[in-house]
Length: 391
Image 1 (tube, helix red, strand yellow):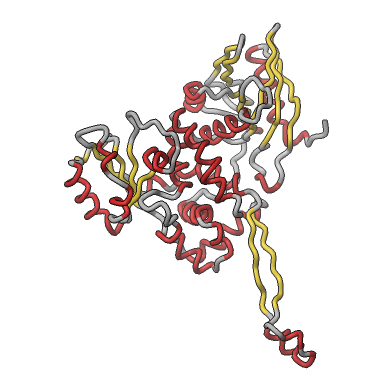
Image 2 (cartoon, rainbow, N blue to C red):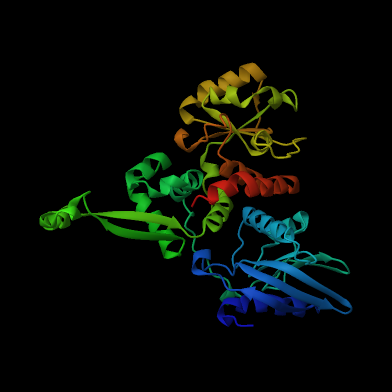
């Protein structure tokens, strides 16, 4: 097996730490080094790892990610492993291999049923004949390094969201991209440069001549002076960009959307509030309710309700909903109303009153509820897949 040992040193270190803490032996069966387009911060797809302890042997499909820092990162990994297991590879279960998980994230892995090991010796395994849960071990600093993130600030979050929702916008002018993303013109180039530096964006430039200029030999000099450059952009890893955007959204952009909490007299109040009524208020459903309206098999028993509303209509819109549905402010209420942060032109006119599917997917992933993660995986295979395939 040929592989770059520098890229998988931390994977081998995690297996060695597992053996040191538990006596479980591990071996990399097959690993694919991340291509430049997949990002340098992770080894994106170790196909299989074998674990052995006594008479018990396991073969696990794995996702290797150097840095896991948020609950949303765990949701993304969970979705990747669910998709991998769905391919019929015959693996016993999925496994996350990373450099370090905090005790809080390790506990969330256990709650989610997401098996993991890290280079500090922390681990959660729960398969036939093998149960391990270790947390609180300190990481070796030499193996932990901060990842490069393109979507790590609010401006880049807004712009990447617009691109993911409207792939044709990738070929637009900087001015148009800035306008539809709601960001400063100077931020557009910075985001594109960051994507290009990671190999996630390819830009090609061709020289185009005025129409008909080459038909007249005497016009060639004139054509050269009037020639202009056409630029074509292409995303090489839209799936990876989506995963990173989803992982960063709950901590970077969502807290800035002025979340407001409410409660209603009954748990099923939302069934009477149709998307068309929200659209008339410059608002839309997000999260579980939107997923159900998009055809996903969502279970909304006891689920929170998420609404996005244009900031300019917020006061009037909340007053209208409070009057019609007897909503009352409540700090921990199940109803959350947030600022809509995108230009309405990127919405799908066939789905009035529903947030863009990418945002609905992010809401589901951020919830960490197993039922929502399954619904999110369903959305990704259908509606979101169609959008990503247009890049």
